[in-house]
Every structure is written in structure tokens, then in C-alpha cells.
Length: 475
Image (cartoon, rainbow, N blue to C red; front, side, top):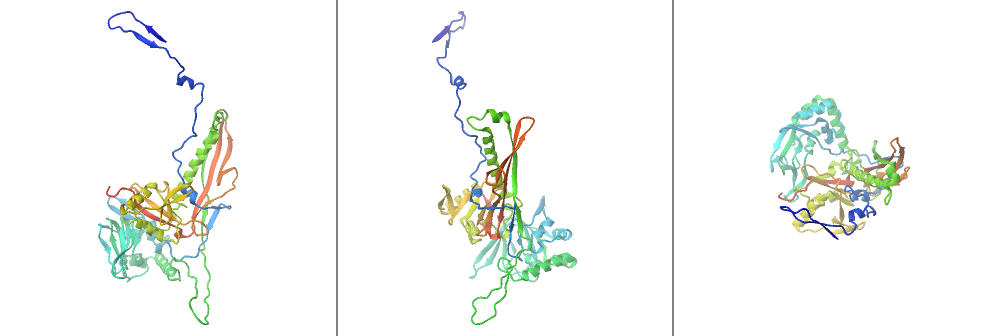
């Protein structure tokens, strides 16, 4: 039907036609109809492969103790530095990360030691020390990378390892004088080192009784019979013939073993009673609120297992189990070296961008990793070890990240997740929801909690490939 209106004729006048609507509009129709809805979506949800692949140990007492054999060899830590303009100084307490000073608590002596270090800038390709030269200095690498270079059986040059920020070389000079460098130290990048000369160290040792006692104790431990891992030796006899007296032996244990308490992630979910009462079709509002809250807690749980300073896997990886990339980007050679550091590796974890960087390097050299089916998903593998993405592994401001290699399980002396199953009001393993009541504003509160931790049973259960550069080559 068309309705025409004709205004009074005049200059510039026109006839306006108004077409009447012939059917109900969709906008009006929606007032009498519902819509088909999806459940609430959430971008934060990830695959959480780490939580899926870790074996979980029931910790009924809330605390998990890791008993180990007595070890005489303290782990090598990382020294920290402060930078003011171009000047670099050693942060004194971090010197206790040097094995000979592990556990040393005399702050005045550590502060004086830190002041005695002299800054030395080095250029790419510069030789800091030469193989065979007397050990006369301790070097702390404040920034940059250096290679330890040795001589092979037939005189060829061999790279023994790469050291980077916070590593130290030459600390043999702390406990013994007159030795010679067993390798050459050559800079693979420009950087800054802090050097402490042997005569200066000897002078301080002569004046400080506490430092002298610390180093004597370290030397005594070093003299104890121990295996290649620094554990107290078990005296055995093998390969002999005839009658001979068997040696006696016992296995000594650590006197103060590490204990892990279960950590907790919690939040209080609030839902107005009117929403919970009236708006539950077609989906239950309280259930959907809880579902998304639980997803967020699980994401935080995985983040904490990677990054928590107390029990996180990155922070609890032994420094002897950390290696540096050879050229920056993660190459097949780097992952081979990472895998070679333990008797068995079950899984590799890396940030998705680090996996992409590794696959670019594989493409560049014409190597194509195979895949394996894991829980219905195809995952790339390297040397038969599946590689899983984990966006909780941090990416630094310099666009570097890390690969984590781990062996898992209690029976395999690996990495285990810790939780307690069977807690009150449990809705998922180790996670419960407890109703806290309704306040005077008619708002219902629910306490949502999840309990967890992780433990590394022996140091070589986990290793890290550090300073993995994520950028494209040449970019």
C-alpha cells in the first residue's frame, strides 16, 4: 500500500511518497522471541599442557619432603649486579651464590669483596683468559656471552660451554692458588665482566677469620670422596679375584631436606541473589560464573608452577642444568645439548613464539621434526620428545625466552605436581567452592580455592635453555 501526500505547490516543491510497512520487523519480533546463545567465552583459557602432563602426587599432610643423598658440592648460582650509567657494581649478598661462598653470612666481608671487583668491558671476539695461563683472577659475567674453549684430543678447537649474565669463571682461585686455566675464555658478544685479582683476594682472606673458615670448610668438603654429581661416595668393590676384604659402606642423607608446602590460589566470587534467582534460563548464572572463575584459577596455577620464586620450575632449576644458546635463536644443536644433560627427558615446554623460532631454524637447515599424537592432538617432537606450548614461560623485554626440558614422575626421580584430593566441598581435584553466606545487600559469596605446588626430586630432572631469541634472523 502506498500513501501519497502532496504539499501545496510552490517553488521547489516535490511530491513525497511514504511506503507503509507490510510485515513485522525483526527488531520488534525479538521482543516475543529468545535468541540462541553461546556459553560465556574467555580469551584467557589456554591448553594448559603443563597441568595435563605433570603427574600429581597426593600430599595428605599439606607438606612434601624431598629426601636426597648427602651432597658435598654446592650448586652454582647467579651473581647479581647494579648498573648506574656505564658503571656496574656487584650486589654483595649475591656473592654467596659462588660455590665457595655458599652459606656465608658475613655481610661486611661480602660487601668488601664486592667493592674489590674491577669493571672490565670486553668486545666481541676478545680473549679474556688463555688456556694454560696461571689463574690470577675471578671473573663475573655482568652482561654478554662468553665461550669456554678447550683443545680436543687431536688439537682441534672445542667449545665446552657458553656463559652469560651472572655466571662466573675462575672461582678455582678462591680455594687454590698457582693453578692454570684449563680452557680459554673468549667473548662471543660484547659485554661487561667484573674481575677480582688473586693477590687482592689473598689479602682479604688473611684479614678475615670468618672468610678463612668458610673457604677451609669448602675445601674440606671438596676433599671428601664424592661421585661426579657431588654426592657422598658409596665405597664398593668390583672386578677383583680371589679372597679380599670387602669395603664397608652406607648411604648418607641430607640433614635438612627440602620441604614443599602446598600453595593456594583463591578468590571470592560474588553473585547477586536476584540474578541467581531470576536469570537462570537457559543457563545457570551461578554455574557459569563459577566455571569462568575456575578457569582463571587454573591459569594462575600453571603460571605459579612455572614462575613462583619459591617452588616455580624456572626458579628451582639448578644453575648447572642451565645452558645458553649458541647463536641466539634456538637451533637443533641447542636442543640436542639440552636433552643430553639428563638420562631421560619426557617433555619439552616452550612459549609458542619460541617453538616457532625453533621451527624456523629447522626449516633453515632442512630438518623437519616429526609429530606425535598426545591426547588427540598432534604435537611436534624433537628426538622423540614432544614439545608443548606454554605461554606462562615469560618473554623478556629483549624478546628472549626459554625451553624447559623435564623428566617427570616419582618413580623416575623427576618433576611432580603436588596437590591434595578430597578436600571439603571439592568440585575438581584439589579445588573447592565454599558458600560463605549472603550479606545485607543480598549478595551471595563463594570462596573458590585451589591447592598446588611442584617439586624437583633431583637436580637433573629439569633443565633450561636460556636466552632463546625469538626474532627472525637478520631482523
